[in-house]
Length: 160
Image 1 (cartoon, rainbow, N blue to C red):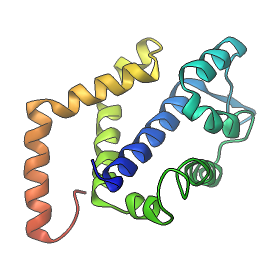
Image 2 (cartoon, helix red, strand yellow):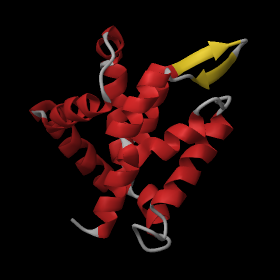
Image 3 (cartoon, rainbow, N blue to C red):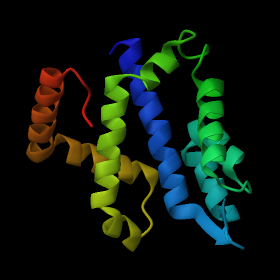
């Protein structure tokens, strides 16, 4: 895999983890949204997802707004990937790439179509990743991607 492909994969995983975190641990208090993680769950997250623990720390006890989540995501990505794991500027290129946009759109479709299943019981992030990966590899999704990519190429755009 190229550095670009790896950067896209890393960005997608961080985006997916952030969504998973909000999906299970978001709480409304006085009309405001917060991430509230019980102490035992914090310990487990720290042990099982050490690469993402910094993101958890940024989110804990902070009021979640669109501006905050965008800034928190960007800060975490820059701290963990930009200039350390990847050359300076590659993460921004990956973020703007067709590959990342496609992966983000697929994850959005998957999470919307499986929301009721995901709400029934708490699932570990690794389980989400496995389910998403299996879904992505299904013949129906592969056929959809093939058609969407062909349509995008004929129109000179990305999958929308």
